[in-house]
Image (cartoon, rainbow, N blue to C red; front, side, top):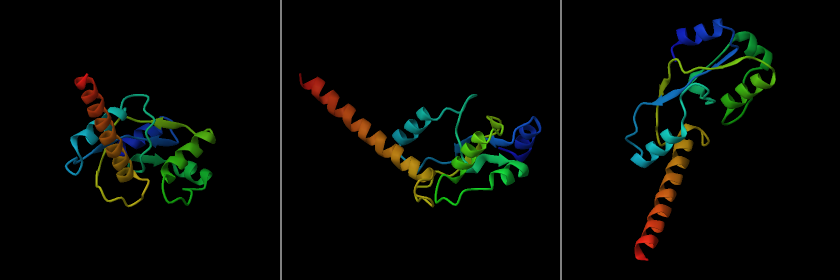
Length: 140
C-alpha cells in the first residue's frame, strides 16, 4: 500500500490501517501451494488479514498501546489485536496491496515463509489423500 493510501484512510478516522499483500514470485513453490494459498486468502472488502509489510498506525495510537510487544513472531498481529481491544479504529484496507517475497528461507519461523511451508505441506497431504481415495474408487 502506498503511504498516500494509508494516509488517506487515516485521515478518514482510522488509528490503524491493515492492508493486503501480493506475492511477487511463486517460482520457489509448487503450483498446488500457490493455489492453496490463494484459495484461503480473501483480499476483498471485509478481509481481516494482518501483515507487518502493510500496516500503518498513528503515533498517538502507537504510544497509547506502548508499541510492539517483544515477541519473536506475530508482533504485528498482536499490535492490531491490542488496538481493537483498546477500542481504536482499525481500517481493513484493500486500496493498494504491498508486493512481498515468497522466499522459502524464513527469517521468523512463524512468519510468512513458515506459513507458506505449512500451506505446501497441507496441499501435499491433501493431494495424496485425494489420489488414495481416487485409487480406491477406481479399484472397485
